[in-house]
Image 1 (cartoon, helix red, strand yellow):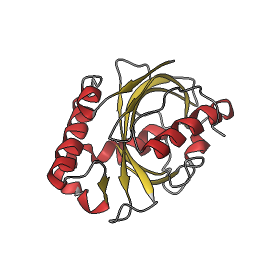
Image 2: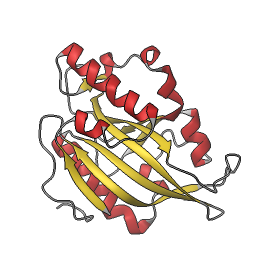
Image 3: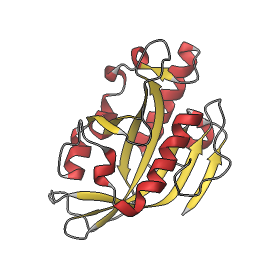
Amino acid sequence: MSVENLAALADARLKLSADSSVGFVDWYTKTCRANDVPILNRRHFDPTEVPEILPSLVILDVTNPRDPIYRLAGTKYVSFLGTDPTGKRYLEYVPDSRFEEVTEAYLHCSAYQCGMITHTVAVNGRGHERTMEMVNLPFWKDTDGGAALHLLALFNPRGNSSWRTDDKSFSQFVRVDYRAFIDLGKGTPDAFQGVNLR
């Protein structure tokens, strides 16, 4: 797996291939500047400003980064997973062998309040694989920047795939081929080992 640190959202934008991923980063950047904040909070998120991303949008509660919880999943994401994950643990969709890697990634996002891009490979119940471009950007659930950190995550398929769009069988995120942490003002991790932080 390739891992790198990106100095700003402008650098992250250059790593993205999907138009809606770029639009998501542009919206986040513009809204942060308009409100003079490094990280958005709930009152800054107006779904009517970005209707095109809503079907692919996920909100993850990482208040406990060792056990992220789905708080919302768009219709495209639900169709992709084959089930609605709202209210469920993210780790339910990750093989046991990846728990430590996933935990470390979300611990970093929480500790540094940074963003993250991944190229995540998912496999469904029929053995079909598909690579997803995922962009995770933090926001505070509270209007005062309290402790309830969430991630706005957008996903888009990358390239061609044998995955049939009408195949609703259960999906798991089996590996990450590329990961980048995005500095939003508090730095990024010096190293990513893919194991639990203690």
